[in-house]
Image (cartoon, rainbow, N blue to C red; front, side, top):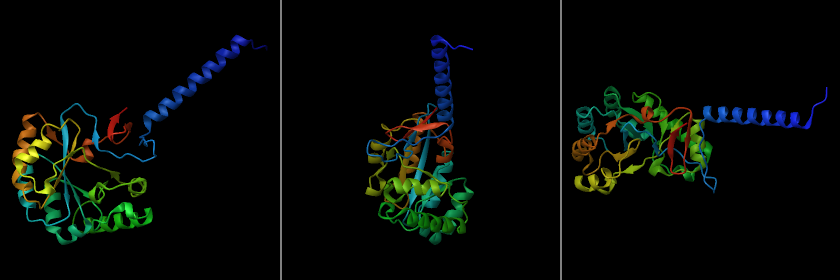
Length: 251
């Protein structure tokens, strides 16, 4: 059987179309984390959503005297938050861990003792993550599925270690700077105008004004139509990409 030139072109075109469709289907099913021109992996900073859902997160590295107050305020606003805790903090404050879990909040891994992960190799990072996990679970929380490095300091090794440990690495898109002892009005000025649907907000416990300001901050966010999800409920688990700003986008 002879195949004419026009038939060859049709066959080649058909095969190219099939290849493109197959590649598109594969990419649609596969989460991707893009790298910058320098090859740096970008983790999740925020989520592309249009439903006015946001996540409230706390990093816990110091004391725990304000945990009861924070839990009470969160309950008032029907806010389930995510607490990234040190393993050493969990060891010192098992009662606080149990109260957070009993109140429906999520516990994430924030390292064992606030060592900067960018100074460590992947093996050392994995060992520290596991040490923190062990302390957190011993204190009464489920094994964390989320990781945030101390000070949000990450590089490719940190992100790859997080993946190897079975955790999603989480940054933030709105920073209260509460650790600088900003008062309520100063935090409101930073948070309210900037917050958009899908944002992840960063707070800390055991600061000068966070616990006492939280009710006002959540009230003002609710006035703008926002409601609250735990980080694991805010982010997409599959079929997504991450843009150069760290915004997770559903495909």
